[in-house]
Length: 314
Ligand code: BYC
Figure: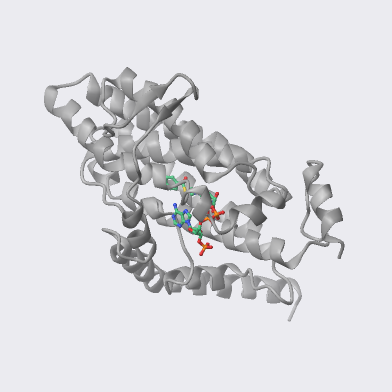
């Protein structure tokens, strides 16, 4: 296959569809990234689900429940998009990919290995984690693979509701009692740096960026998205009356951006190795769900087989 022709095609803003010819490393890159993205959505349900039964009002509970359900839906669209890439050489089967994650062979976003210790954390997740996800996913709406790009359009619409519900939780806390505002500040202190690390390692250590940008999967680098996220988040924190926990944070008139401090990259590496605060707990919860819900899958398969037999008089 003529790789340069393919690269020119995607750089002309054309979409690649499942049955089109594509380079093997493009297919491989997409299976890796989209499946990791799907795993992030379904593991990402856990920290927030922790607070559904303890939400402070019926209204908050309904919104959180809907948000967590949305994340399951995002996982489904993304696993379905990944499956379109399977062929004789590439396994993209959802069960196999999921098993890889449970076995620690496939990654999911580092951010979901942090605990949710207070209700304010649910606000911080919506504001910062969904906010960072949107920043990345708006860029991914323009990625070259049709099914992934279309999944992103729908996901971004839902994520913007998630981001607002998180920010609104923090607005209520910041306008509440002194203790409530303190709780919001503590949540920001704990989630700020992990949220910035969602964008991935610095560009010089990003092993996949060069190929990804060449194939128009990524259209912007990790560092440029991180910078944009910081630039939009600082005034949002100021509006809440909260302080970003970074002594080096300063507006740089010349660059037209905020300067910021060094991220805790050794912590990021530890989380990726499985040594974050909740890595083990998250995988245990998913393995437990897999075991306990096995009968639901078996029942659904048995029922569909029975229906097929009846329909075809077998
Ligand atoms: N965490 O070469 P790089 C959500 C890995 S969920 C863990 O820059 P790439 C939500 C990376 O995989 C939204 N690993 O990689 C859900 C690579 O390792 P491998 C989640 C990370 O792919 C529920 C290595 O580090 N969003 O919104 O070019 C509730 C080198 O990195 C991370 C997505 O998944 C990380 N943070 O760029 C609430 C977006 N960062 O695979 C909210 C889709 C890097 O070579 N993914 N690594 O072994 C992407 O856009 C890209 O994969 C990344 C990384 C920007 C994350």
